[in-house]
Image (tube, rainbow, N blue to C red):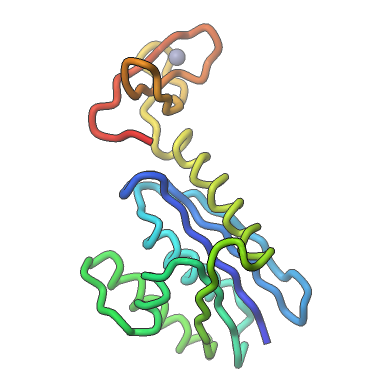
Length: 178
Ligand SMILES: [Zn+2]
């Protein structure tokens, strides 16, 4: 039996984000993985994490518990509600196909945040990958030096600020803010 803990995170909806996954087998950690994602939502990032976990599990894991803290993701995976966006529907289809191809029988379990250590660790991983996504995937290039920029909220609004010390390059954010 395997236990999987998946948490997705995006600070804006949508925005750069990420997910964290922990897979345990026989009590031992088989895999810890975090991944930054381009523009996503917490829901999409959670479902993407579930999909990635299914690709990482050894085939033929007859019984796998997948623990998630996102109630909408749980309701979608349990088919208690229907997806209203194409992107979400696509990921759900991929999850069903992958589970079938890899002969993995899944049981989904909803856990509230703060109730399981592995889930909390996965959440920390999701937050750190989301931060990375903001500074790499989601940032424009500095207009002065071409380096990556970091999102900052300053007193006069939200800006992209150059990461290079003393460059001073900045761009006002019109559409996105953290
Ligand atoms: Zn710069």
